[in-house]
Length: 120
Image 1 (cartoon, rainbow, N blue to C red):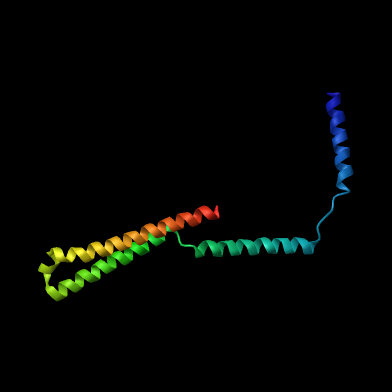
Image 2: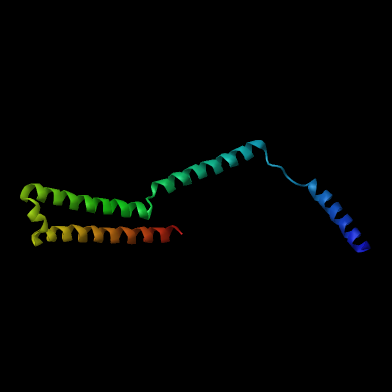
């Protein structure tokens, strides 16, 4: 018990001795450091908002694909009538559009994952 009290007194004396040697930063330096931190936070938010999320790119690619298919279907319907929509010759452009968009979706997903691994 006496040893604990002696250690506490020595610790407090040691803290008092070191507290006089502590250097304080000037207000100008504190201001510049805080300004730099705020600037870096603002820039990191801008960079994060510039990168597209993977889900957004998937939606945009699928949106383009379905809009092309709809335009093709509407064009065929108004040009040749409703019987042309069931003809097998119409399936080839649908398959071509779908496969081209699928390949593009695969490449963009692969590229997004590759970029995210480099950033980590």
